Image (cartoon, rainbow, N blue to C red; front, top):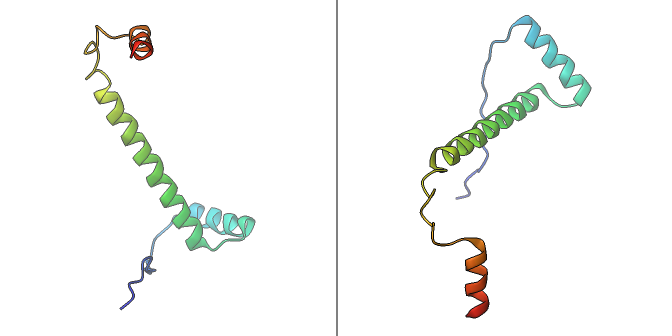
Length: 84
């Protein structure tokens, strides 16, 4: 049996008049369906949020290694590699 990877789901959404008119206009300008535009915007927003979360995580661990390698600097590591 073959599994369908990207199943399409039907969703009913409610938009303000302003958002609906802008969506219609955007659809005409881009030549894409309204569903495709909404899908693209959702996926882009999720990507941005995931990126922000990764950056937040990196900032939270940035000081974990601070001062852990006091005896090693770039020059001493380079000279050690040359001598080996």
